[in-house]
Image (cartoon, rainbow, N blue to C red; front, side, top):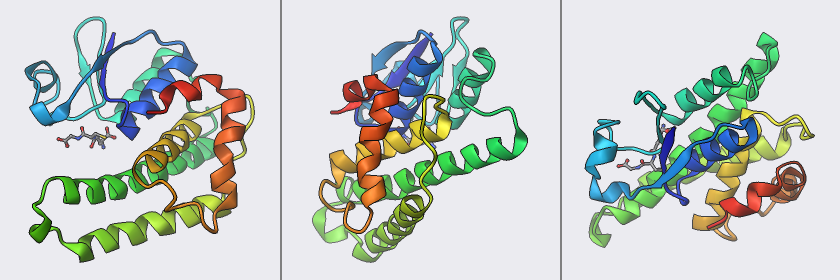
Length: 196
Ligand SMILES: N[C@@H](CCC(=O)N[C@@H](CS)C(=O)NCC(=O)O)C(=O)O
């Protein structure tokens, strides 16, 4: 099994941490999407990471489809069996991924436009969404103990991305969120390896 990934991609980090936790052996294939690598495009026409290739050559994307695949392969290591609890975990994952979507939109707006074409109102709109999401997380932190689930990995990946691209810009007024990584790392010591 292979996972096309980049250490700076939050969705890649989410699935790679989850695979590690669930005991899925997948070889990481370091991938720069900017170059449209043919081996990635052959698996995923969208040219996005993460993309997983199974041992029998099937491609699986996007990150949530990969998470569900890992969960099925490991008989439920990532999502609770109970329907209500599962929905809660899926919502946490959706919120964390959604905040990453907003943050990525900001990064791409700046990266793929010449300075005079960067549209600040679009950046502000995305930053507002991300801010509301982060406030919601800070007010509704997930219980975190030895039994980790997909939502924890999505949150851990989001925090790594914030540290990487928005250092010092998101912690104010969100002490619980700021301190959560330390707690998570106690239960997932490999978290340090997912820092760029
Ligand atoms: N919804 C997708 C998002 C994947 C995504 O946007 N990945 C980024 C890297 S973090 C990417 O591949 N960007 C390259 C591109 O869009 O060309 C998922 O959850 O996997």
